[in-house]
Length: 482
Image (tube, rainbow, N blue to C red; front, side, top):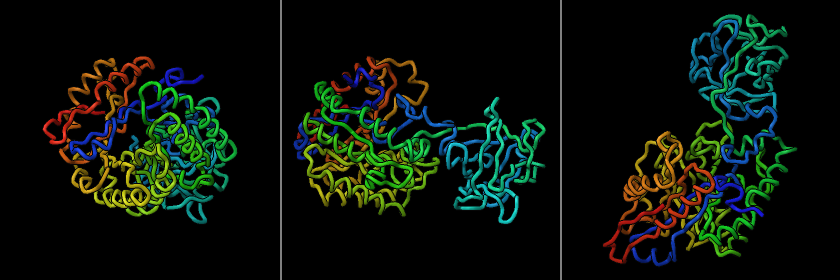
């Protein structure tokens, strides 16, 4: 029988939700803090969580969004999209940076489109063999086969749609007209490929497996990764809520746009059924929005470009409306989070507020009781920038995220040291976004990296700290909340 502990609790993101208010009315409406786990890697997959679903994908180091660089073995210079795109390719750079980096769009396990710094695609010039980066769309002439050397998979040749290979015959002439087949360093069609970074999200998984295999891979995952037994286990161990990340494509289930596959909506329905059975609440978190709000793999992005903006508001609100309408009458619905981790400065604050207002209105159309959660922007942004806006709305929560994970300073900390860090550092950060008569505070993620046993110990310690102390006059406002 499976449980959180037996499968290794780091398969989940551990977090404590404390919705804390200093005004009496909203506080009395909340019987107790939400003490929950974030069910990450269930309905929105993330490759860093284990067990990994990506190992079975053919050529799985070349997924959508993988950033690669190509060094000519003959010239010892890098291929470059001159000016970042909009003109020809050259091979005259002794070192590689943005213009020399190409983002893959995977057509199948061996054929790819190459997207350059300014977002155009590499392709063949009309009626010719000159290699350029001028197209904003992809087609046959923008598709290349990456052929890897059997003995050294970092050595590659790029075969164009005309059947011939890209060659760097000189530093300023890059063409697709080579017909040889050798792998010598002096061959102008041989390149050393360096993988700079990669993505492992829902798009990479579904497009990597393809339409024949992806549906079954994900159905097996949804059926086994989180089950009713997990809800029973959580309920019996003092947890009373779950935060469930979903992607924008769930609103089109069972036939979402390719490469996404249907079935996640049924899994979310199951979660509400199990939550009701075991007296738990559900926070539905729109984790990935169309266009990507942060460029991270868990946003559903194809290639890591952050492209969500004002033109995406209407379609994103439609997803919120779908979720609110479907679950408003479910007793387990606690909250809907309108967006996870928008990134500054790519997401403009005024645009975000405009979306948050529209998303709030969509939820309120179906429910007066569900909390509406507004995620603070990550990156160079003021943690208090939403306070004034949110104060004019009812049953609204500001979501902040803290990571004891992505810095070397946390690597050698044990659970108690993490607790002390939270007391000394996170408390003051939370105080800045927690104001008398202001919106509630919510920590949607607080990640640490420990063994399963140590993580459980940390979880229990955090639960012991979250209960707020307040009164109706607001005279006591010292709180620790996670």
